[in-house]
Length: 221
Image (cartoon, rainbow, N blue to C red; front, side, top):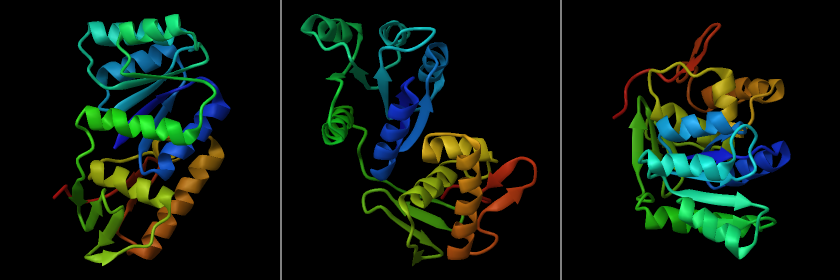
């Protein structure tokens, strides 16, 4: 299940991406207001976690544009603006929930789960591609019928590959969506993760496209 995290504070963004990732969500993190607006318009997300204090275009304006253009993705607003009048403005702009900073991670996750339940987006799914099968409810991955012992990051990487079989995923894309950042260290970690997945499956389970990235061969089942 893919979440768009719109947060311009790098430290907060990394912490939240890790928090969501431990719960099994795939996270795409963006910090620029105009880019967030565009991705929210065109991307396929189960929910959007939106900070209001964004550079280039503030979160409230982004949210109003989404709703005016028919975007119905559930939005959870995070903000340091905590007065009741500002919360009313957020709800009137189209927010589905509103969480003032600072907050506990446990409350954020609980609110996100409730938001997804209300939107009918939490039906457990089993998805398969090539020789992998992933059970989202049990958080279980099998390869050729054999259960794999995966770390949370490896689980998210396999989920991402299963969602896009046959597509070449760049190290930067994998780092961003699996780890919530795409710096050099994160991209190097992607290479190490792919190597571990191959050891746990076989050397051809994930193919390398030299100079481009990695691909899960085959099709969804």
